[in-house]
Image (cartoon, rainbow, N blue to C red; front, side, top):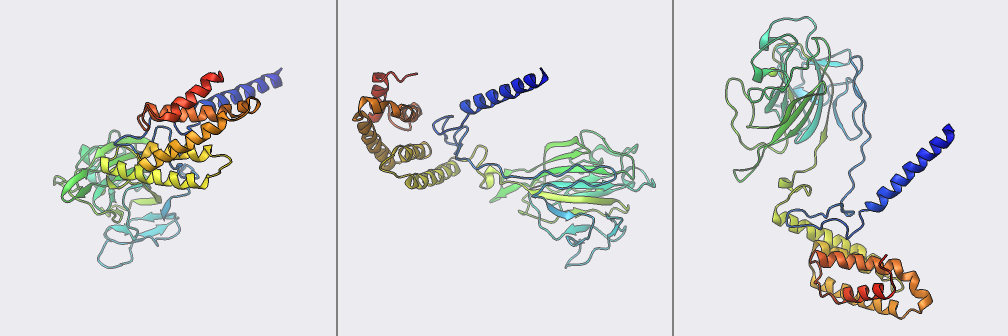
Length: 394
Ligand code: MG
């Protein structure tokens, strides 16, 4: 009985999968077409697949987790080869490694990465000294400085109050964290940051920049808008950032420890040439042109006099992205020829063309519905006529 139930469940799962696939194959001529600000159609099969990343593992108090496969490792407990003193020239840092973790040597100054890092997903783990000394900003203070300019505060706020915009997880002096989820001093605090730098062009702000921060899995900063670099006592001033800069960790006079530091580069935003999200009319047009050209190239490879339909459909698909008179004319000519050849088939062979003809009909219906081809496009009437005559509507 159990086996039967299991088989039935598997069968149901397959049925669901098949149903899902049939309804969402994302074939061409399927979802809403590109428009003035979106170069891709809805459910567009031409859109690149997300890159494959092997996930890492989560940290435990005893052991740092494993970074995802595309992470760039800044510190894994082995050496400080990615780091130097935050001083002119390439000065070796006096921060040290003890038991596989990096520790701030107080009084030695900030440490910075040799890597230049821009927009990123950043992972950092820190621990305040177990022996509690000082209070408020004097206890377990350090800081994660994005592009060396925006401080995400590191502070032992476990049963230690201070001004809200200086708490652990604050954008220092700008935005208090939404919560205080800190573990006790000596224990590890896991910080995950998504950093989008401000983007200016010709003195004009295209994007003010944002930071999202989690500590120990709890949301601290929710896409908080940046207001320039952070500072002590002084209000931030919006302004241009370089594309990339070093990540810095602060020496604030406390031997704060760090482990498991890595980052992943983020895709470009629309304002800097990315092709996801609403784009400018110019950028959309350029991308649509590029997609159309790629499709036309792939259409040429499908050319086959014995089976013209794949090339014909692919060429029609290119028109979804770019109106091109020569291509439209070729589509018309090929469709007319194709339908003529179908009509000439003897009755017993015609049936084998049912799916192909219906496929062409769907494409032409889509193209005329969205004004990609004119409603008067001659092959459309022709294909509809064949379908009606052959009773292929269903
Ligand atoms: Mg600090």
